[in-house]
Length: 176
Image (tube, rainbow, N blue to C red; front, top):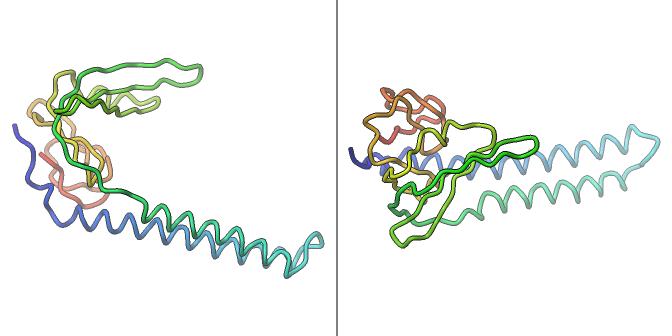
């Protein structure tokens, strides 16, 4: 029973950098697709001609690029803190169910982890569990994992059997 020292593994920093790069690249790819798509539409369509279609593509492509840049660079570093699970709640809605786990830090500030139509995370945490919130990954690590059959990757949230050591999805170490 302990918090893992593997949180300092450089693969987590690489994962964060790659995620940031992928957001930018995705926005850039959408921008290119929008510009080329509208240009081709202007060339092949009787409804709109170039340069009007091309200009619309540039505006929409520019918006995609700005969204990608904003998404990549707007993520603020959050603090790491220790706390515990203080409450769990199920909210039935008309077409879905929300499973909510409430955490409280050492300063009595409350946080929640909400999933829709999936009770896996809800069932993973028990009231009274000691947890550490890893701000750079925005994820929770349980202090006592000794009775768990599963573990979540703190980087990508992929679920694993407890005896695994490396995430099959992102390659980061599992914190146990």
